[in-house]
Length: 82
Image (cartoon, rainbow, N blue to C red):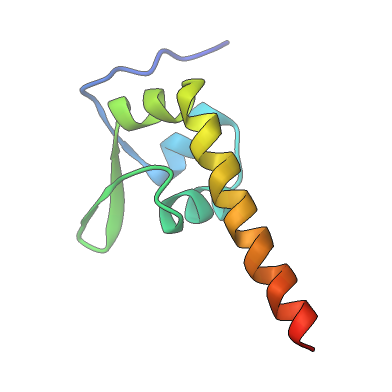
């Protein structure tokens, strides 16, 4: 059973994990890399439904690839310096 993401609803990271069927570490990585925006309330993140819908849109794939390639480049450069 799939659940509909409501654009104006506010979700916790746990709810977002369940909606997207991803792990806690993946959510943290998405937040850290700025691929999904959230507000911190009382030490916990709150994510708007619009952000979840934006995340699963095809346009974001390009940004994710760019972020991956940038990180890969940093790792390769670091390794080459050794």
